[in-house]
Amino acid sequence: MDRVLLRESIEKNAEFSFARSGGHGGQNVNKVNTKVHCTLSLDVVEGLSSKELQLVKVRLASRINGAGLLTVDVQDERSQERNRAIAINRLESLIVKAAFIPKLRKKTQVPQSAIEKRLKAKKLVSLKKQQRKHQCMPE
Image (cartoon, rainbow, N blue to C red; front, side, top):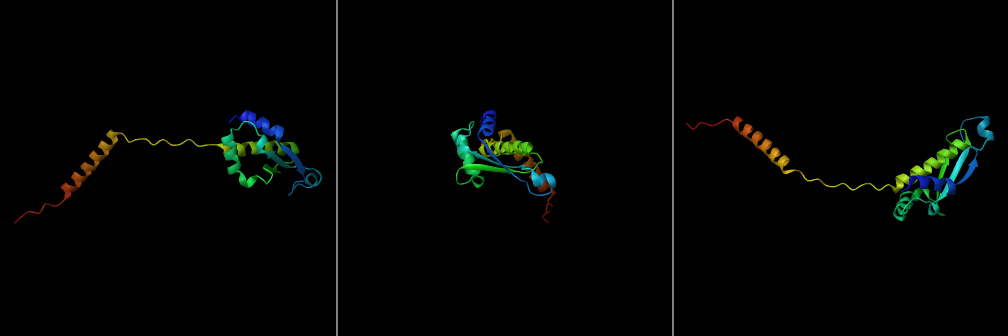
């Protein structure tokens, strides 16, 4: 995955629409369209292999609408430009996290010396406990 190419592709192909934010804020909220609704078609995204693209589509299925568009809404800041930048960052991080393939864990074999050391320690404990037993003397 090429993150630089992915970022450029998102910035180039994402479509933005703006609306008034909800919540507190007074005159700024009532007059300025600061909320950003960002949509991105995953079919035009560059920087992902076909396998990674399939993973993204499966893992982000709940965020993708019927038209195949990934959507993000942001109304964190008072500025439209800052919300737009946050939306791009969120899209990128969503795609990167969804396309991540964890490395498979290799099973390691326990060395023979460790096995022998453990068995020797067990034997010593066993001997110690056997020596504690009371020896019955025949009469």
